[in-house]
Image (cartoon, rainbow, N blue to C red; front, side, top):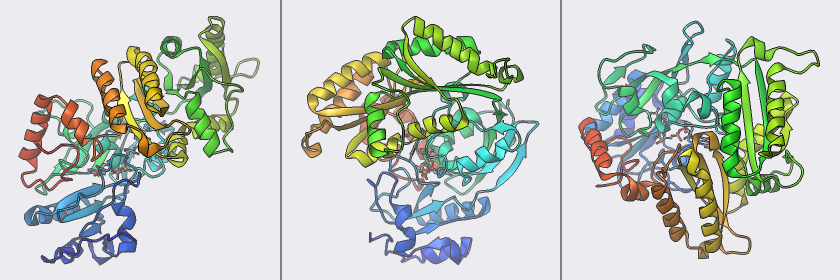
Length: 485
Ligand SMILES: Cc1cc2nc3c(=O)[nH]c(=O)nc-3n(C[C@H](O)[C@H](O)[C@H](O)COP(=O)(O)OP(=O)(O)OC[C@H]3O[C@@H](n4cnc5c(N)ncnc54)[C@H](O)[C@@H]3O)c2cc1C
């Protein structure tokens, strides 16, 4: 068992936490806190004075005031699915983990105004279900939906597979309520779509990974639920052609592409090896595998045609037929039922677990201008092969986002491989191609050194000024996102 709890409670801190949230909501026993002090990747483990689970914004504010006065570091936590070690305290400072999972109420849902106000601890999938009951959707979508919370989604500005159509979490948020590092509460939950009254504080807190305050609630946009969907797995002749396929689909469906996910052969192989129950969507090897989903909420697109097919599906099928005639698409499997669609998405969403199960790997979450992705993949795959790595790549291709995981080539010993050289090669080419070293997972602890190396110094300086101005005692998630400087 890990040594989970910091044993310095000289100031009676734990009793003070209990006085604010009640005894039952302060966890200190090693077996109770162990999972809160280890991140999803298992790479980061730490200690804390306690894990505190407030139930209201007022309690969060009292906790932060106390921690600010006593110089205790505060580490906010949601569903603990973050992949960069952001939700685990750093060693060497008295810290408290503030878990928002008890704050899980959907405060209101306005079907007419198409907004929902949810507390930070609401699990993403719960929000999906609540919206769907009203014939609406909350379109943020990815594999951790059953565990991650909307507070964590906001704090990491999470992306996922529907960004190509709806944007990332920032674009889905209309307002937030948050507790600032001095314990003051900002309440910007009006849900207004237009409000130009000074600096947009929600945008400051979104993507701040808990370093500027604790988000306690937010207003999100909702969208009409699709009446028709067409989901297919394509083998496209080469990566360059994938962009043409995406643009053709967008042009013909009025921007109806909801997801355009890159799944090349090595990724399919590892998924099917680790999860033998998952069936390959196409027989034989795929050239450039793409999972595409087109959706429409227009009644017209959901109509059943004379031959029994749904109009949108028939149109997508016809379009794909044309792309096959042109030689851009080599093979395609269209989901014929909701079950087949679910199977395709299960396959896509299994990839991170499959890679993690398959053996050691280093995960890069990068983005590039769409037109430069093919060059990056071609050059970098060859370079990694020379160094003894086998890239296991998937990506939200429609957003220019690749999850580029480096595993060992068969027969090579992971520990003997030149990982630092490999990372430098990746970052150098990214810099040359105007890419980003962190597309959607954030910085946390894991990307601090590359942040120091690659983030423009002027931007880092502004970020530090903001942090110093708002968090004078550096209590909010210290040592995350901003490298020491
Ligand atoms: C299988 C799997 C698939 C994933 N796929 C994607 C994907 O496609 N796209 C993507 O973007 N991410 C993905 N992720 C990463 C992760 O799910 C997201 O980063 C998610 O938004 C984290 O939410 P959480 O509630 O788990 O946050 P946590 O992990 O608990 O916290 C993440 C960060 O946010 C801070 N934080 C949490 N709650 C608050 C709050 N209320 N106020 C202030 N700060 C807070 C924490 O301190 C930490 O720095 C995936 C993860 C897994 C395990």
